[in-house]
Image: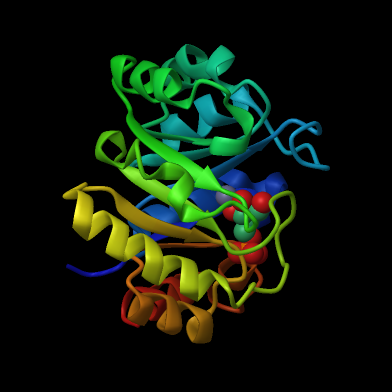
Length: 216
Ligand code: DX5
Ligand code: ZN
């Protein structure tokens, strides 16, 4: 199966968001990655529900929504109504992660759990069977354009082994500092899906950059 590419609109041109959504529609990308930040869980604020609703109207690919917010369980139904197809919460932000994951599925979405760089993949050992996506942060969440943390490669290998052992169907998605070089190394380590923000949107031809990532 070929790699899943999920361009992060955090690095899009917010004055011309419709144009950038159309570009992703036309491109070889598979998902739209939408970063929701609350200024509490992470030291930055991005955009919220009305923007997601509008993107949903224009997007013809699944919305992969990454919640970087505290108590994400409070907003599950709101993001389902706004059009999220995959909803990913941080393990560090949800005290009752198992319940949160069940609520995401009951609301009709695929369930993802994200881990910060310092959180061991073993923290998910007893919930892997219930997940559709495990999102490993390869930068500290909050900002686009940061450098890839190389230890992520080791985490991908460990997680791949854990998933095979558990029979979980979850896919491994990586977020932060992805480019052709890190992307290639991540795929070799066992990643299934790559998020890319600045590498795509700051490039001279974003559509071609997406094609390059898809063909790594
Ligand atoms: C960071 C976000 C990422 C961000 C990645 O907290 O979760 O999705 O957009 O940006 P790049 O690809 O520029 O590192
Ligand atoms: Zn993200």
